[in-house]
Image (tube, rainbow, N blue to C red; front, top):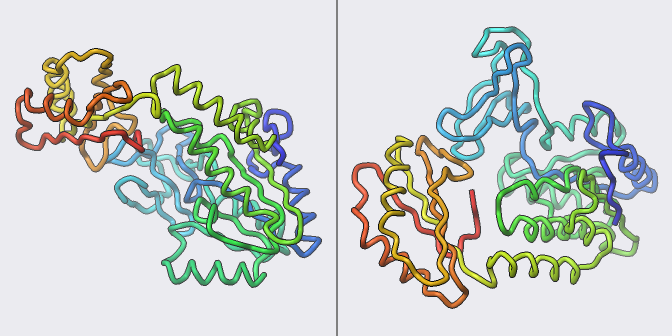
Length: 341
């Protein structure tokens, strides 16, 4: 397991595969082995920008950038499914041929791989690249050795045994760490462990490379050292200090409405009638990390309590004190949430 510091050893501008990783892939291909390039981001680019006026294409119904899917020629929202043809001119200023992709998705990595490793038999594996039957066939072909270079998303991270696969390159090992999720480090460590575990599962030794801008991060350092216990101990200490699970409990209340003021106003009203309890903390209201989905504005209240507190009973009692939601107002309750979007 090797961390590639992208600050010192990153690729040239406009490329996403670091030179060291490229050499290792070439080596595997020369030996008749397989290599995997992993990026947990579908599509070609996560953002499309007009270089003339700076306009950024966003979903009209969600707080989300439209992801370019170049193979289909579309811009798409991964939250609600909104889709539009990729325009030739900027919809804001009218400039022609001014739209540029920002950042890499799996399709863009595949494009670079085709240029760097033209002789390799390549396959792209992503959930939007076909139905279950087609994907099962691709996996069977990989197992038979019919492809040399696999370019994939989380779809390839676990449950697959490729005997010829000896090199795994994670192109953005920091990707999952950027979210405001208390479990972000845990989820990233799990995913990296799963995907790097695809290499060297048979007689030949495997190598894994983590491209990162934060090689000293606890997750990356523990991965490189193979020290699961060190990560586990650090993560437990962080959670203990913050009163986070498993040392405390959380509940999220998401208030949504078609108008932001309505959702925020009701969330404030909820907060005003919240019963006080020893050891209980209330946070918010604040816009949820994804503040709008399918045209509905989302405002979040977060409750933090001790481990043995009856959080479900508390929330039920709390909601009974508040005025019932009317019109298109909705309140979604998530006890011990696993997702924080």
